Length: 216
Image (tube, rainbow, N blue to C red; front, side, top):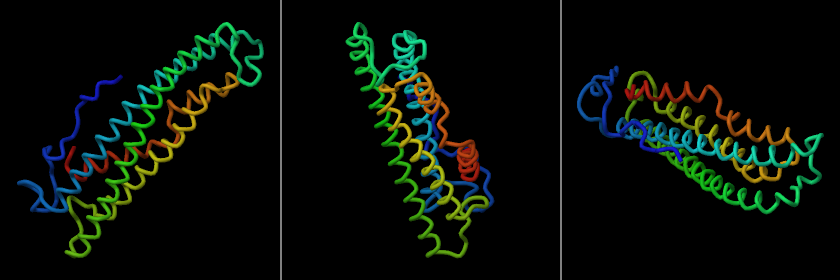
């Protein structure tokens, strides 16, 4: 599995931030600013964990595809087996190996489920900060130009992308070992790799969060 000791943003360490608001230019952040900056660090770290899990899962999905394609489908000129069956002489070996691999996929899918839940919790925290700021002051800009509602909408949009992608991962996990033809197998493999619900916009949203809060 991928080593998770990758470089992360620390919720407490400042990274040479250049902010517009005078009280954010130096010293330790407190209150809403501290919560928001810590929350953004959490979002970044959770997304890195997701990427690691997805990469690990891709290796496993490739293994499943290779077993099915090389040892099953190549025997059939039309590359299709009735009811997704396995030749009798390979059934025991394939069943044993696929059982082990499925357990590994299950661990990764559950890990991604936890990440989505934590992202949802972080999103709820941002809503709380927004409501507090609206109650306490008319000056809603916390860092450079963003008001709390922009943080809320950005994190919500990111969370929704990962929530939809997690549901797709569940479907792939439940069905890939029962694929009946080559095209279906390749569809599952491609879907896991390219993550259609996590669009290019997710990178822009994350970078915007990091830049606004001074993490970059």
